[in-house]
Image 1 (cartoon, rainbow, N blue to C red):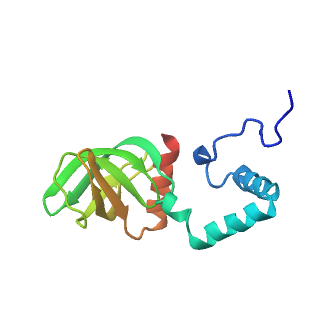
Image 2 (cartoon, helix red, strand yellow):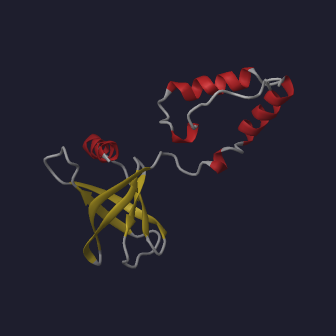
Image 3 (cartoon, rainbow, N blue to C red):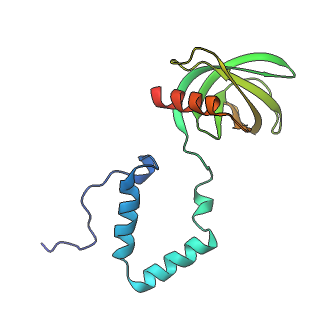
Length: 153
């Protein structure tokens, strides 16, 4: 049985790897160097047009978590559970009524932090399960808190 030159040994799924993992870049270089000139030209055109960007909506990788959260807006203080989190935002499981564009502040307590962390954000998505929240600008303590929550789950 002849071996197909395009068959590759088992590799970890790149979508499940962290972006800092150097093997993703290595795999990309390997695949590109093995392409024909025509394939390389087509890939270049796709990248220049931004075709792949529409496939990856989020700027930041989301990490599934299950963490208690409190949030406050004009309606008062409520609580829920964070379903996923990234440096760009979070999804909160909640049955409260929200509208896209609403401002709120969220708070959570990372396990290795002494204080509760509050972050300002805006509702960007509303579903029957809850709300998507995009964070506004954050300081280093807030960023560290998010990374802490994402890495301990």
